[in-house]
Length: 354
Image 1 (cartoon, rainbow, N blue to C red):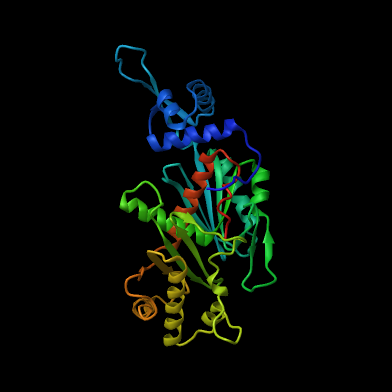
Image 2 (cartoon, rainbow, N blue to C red):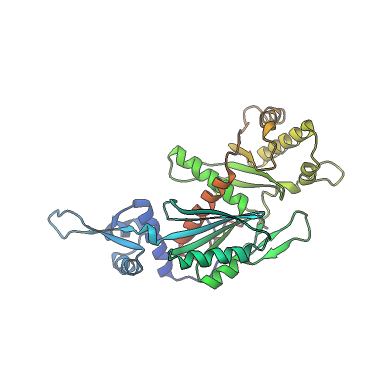
């Protein structure tokens, strides 16, 4: 996964994260089973379980039936005491959900806002959630911009220069002393789509997945890329910003072409060539296309036209996205749960963000 980036953390916090992760995977376990699963000594497991019991994050489920020796006690996560709060920022809306570590949604809301002062609005939501007594252990925010490598701020803008900066992740983490994962919204959308696809296939992880999720909105054309189960970020966190791909010899790029509302033939051909280019670079098994500004009625034409530019034995499957909000919520929830189980303040940095 690469090197770890974030606030200093102790081995105890990492071990607690491993125990939580093991309990999530196993469901119910004894101290011996947790020790075997995590590689942590039984003495340390016993000590850390006591802390988790005191904080009500883990509960006792009773003793095993006697097999002649001392009966072992079984433990499980207290799902209602290990909650994550996840946000999806999109234009004049903020979606947020509270969920447990099984991705079960406890609260799901969407608020309309008049300005783009996202930090102010998110602060109000967090304050209300905390006052309600919900045990929030981690916060995730999917943002429409390029997230900085330390995952604590992001940059946004529709042109190649003059981007603005927000330190929303740093501010919230410092104010509430709750670990925050900041993720690009399209990465979260792609990750969520992938998680749901893998769930349907009934496999354990994303390792088999190679896909790109192309998203069209009034903010631009972007994408989330997954290669061998890992999100792709690039050296400067800029991977996937398809709107800035140059087109033609007049300095025009894809985003300006889309904004010019081209005729159907030109639109279909541009997107078909885009898919063919992507196929040459990352060779995805799956291409997902969606977003409120995508011309959905041209999907079939784009799929058919793409075949002109792609060798017939390497044509990816092309799907129309059904629900990008749902995909983003699933993605940012899953990434926030991963943060909580890592025992680390910020997600690991082998994955530079886009």
